[in-house]
Image 1 (spheres, helix red, strand yellow):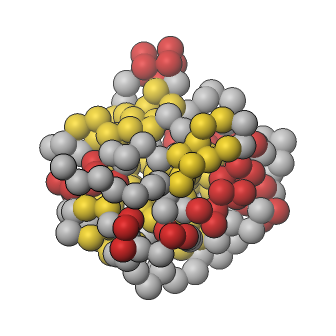
Image 2: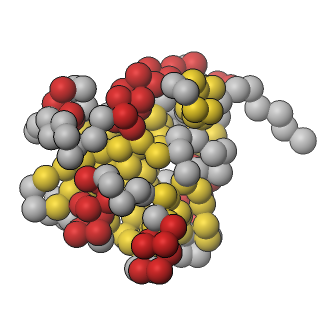
Length: 198
């Protein structure tokens, strides 16, 4: 699949605010690339880990093709799918590229390239998400082998400025279809709800 142009509201996020992209606990799409091969999988166990430099964690099962690409390239991208991507998120979390090598084409995944990043190591980004975090693997062989836990240093971050601006999520003023997804198992999601400010 050829990447398309960046979406119109794709805006850089300062790295000291990148942790806020994951702080509300959404399901993520994990993309990776190596030697011209791309893959995307869904993951529910991802979270912010550190502020400076910003770091995240994500669990990537040994059986996944995405993990192989992450280990080979040393990079991955976390993306926050929105309400219209719920069915795609389930499909990308259910189908494996090991048995369905054309899963990205089969499910119509639309990609674009991260601006200003080297294409050979930078995973393609998935269209229609609310935020994107490009991460370099922080090698922790014991955690990776024993717990499938990967640590990534966030090296670039972007968000849809209709829903994340000035370092904050603005779900209340954004279109409902930009709400992020929270997976609760069995093919069921909740969309991010109304905010409560204290």
